[in-house]
Amino acid sequence: MSKVFSFTPDYQDFVNAKEVIKGGSGYCISLVDGKEVYNKEKDSCLPDEIEHIYPDYSLYGITDTAYGFLSRGCPRGCEFCHVAAKEGKCSYKVADLSEFWRGQKNIVLCDPNVIACPDWKELLQQLIDSKAKVNINQGIDIRIMTDEKAEMIKKIRVDSVHFAWDRYEDKNIIIPKFKAFKEITGWKARKTSVYVLTNFNTTLDQDLERIYTLRDMDYDPYVMVYDKEHTNGSDPVRKLQRWVNNRKIFKTIKRFEDYDPKRG
Ligand code: SF4
Image 1 (cartoon, rainbow, N blue to C red):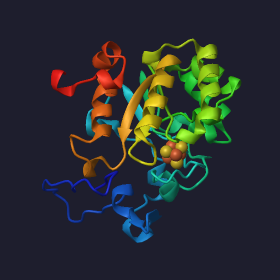
Image 2 (tube, helix red, strand yellow):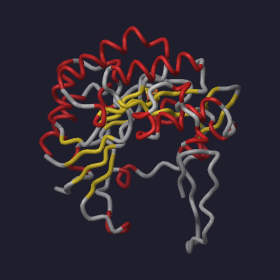
Image 3 (cartoon, rainbow, N blue to C red):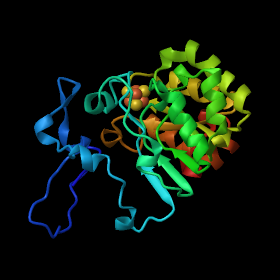
């Protein structure tokens, strides 16, 4: 039994097994004095030969998609993220694509920060060579983007890629990186979304500045609300989230102050 977040309930249904083993970030990471701490006793790592076995996708009736990690860990250690506590504060290669992909049409890549991995070039090349449709389902770290990385990402068959602009203070580094990525790929907004973390350490004005700047650079911002379960529906960040994340509304109503949730 596994889960990602500690605040979500355990799987409630009956499991027909002699023993249930729990593991994963939802069980083994806890907040101690505001810091995420990994508790090995509460985790259950798989034996190495199982961790690296080709997945039995038929258990879930999956025929055309391969899921997996080529790298783990992230050097950033953002305070609001548990990747560093769970996988380590550096990115390292854990597999070749052939470990979990055997010609399926689609690949879902779950790496937290693949372009921070020292083997990024080899790993991106494996994704290009697969010619499969790739869904990189975590963010790509725009702050360490280079022309060479962007050129390679452009060659991967992706529907879209996701970035993040979580820290307002990254402004001066991040804006030129976003502009350069657009120039190289020529990808439109719908192919390049950017998570914008709110309710963590930014003001509403700083949230709006990031949102407008991203829109002006032809990126699709997507608002994430930190600690959402402790906010209520009337909180300004919740209103901001409804406005931005509803693409139709965001395209029609250009300014946040003109958005009235009661009118939809
Ligand atoms: S860059 Fe992303 S994956 Fe890495 S620590 Fe920050 S939020 Fe987590």
